Length: 246
Image: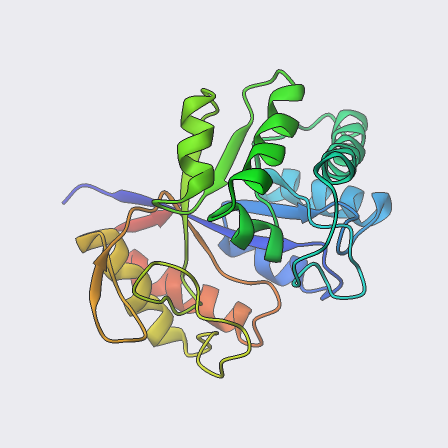
């Protein structure tokens, strides 16, 4: 049997402080760069950890809203949002340059990510920011989203992302964090959720239906209470099925 590969990413630098326990089990990371959490010192620490573990580095910009951790839609002009996102990624890029590391991708955070999936104005701002760097930076996008279509039209390389520890609705939106079933904390359930997406390219929604989905990378949230246990379990189960996290 040929070995398969799967990419697992985690949002980091968000103040949880568990990165040293997480990095041995992941292949990509998304570094908070000041919008909802993080500063240049935390960015530097995470970049060094990423280099040590050969983990691909992504920027994790957000609405500039530390008060709500970037998880609430923000009333902000497109121009102000563009400036904020550009500054956030620029800050990470400057530290990457100092540490002789490179940016692999961008993944918007929280409410910004969710809105970009359905709102063309928000998606357009993000696409314009990425194009401004004139570099082959990849963009994490949800399958069948507004930002996916816009990125393809603008020749931005995309990576389809799915969430291994979040439940989905039938329309492939994430179940609201206000719902007690939003986050999946049981390692075996996370594995089954993820393995279905890898093997069958479908996901079982909270409503009980199987819905087609594509994913090139899978996110486990760094603030999931069981994130380390989940990652260890995934590594063990995937190894048994000759799937390598890389």
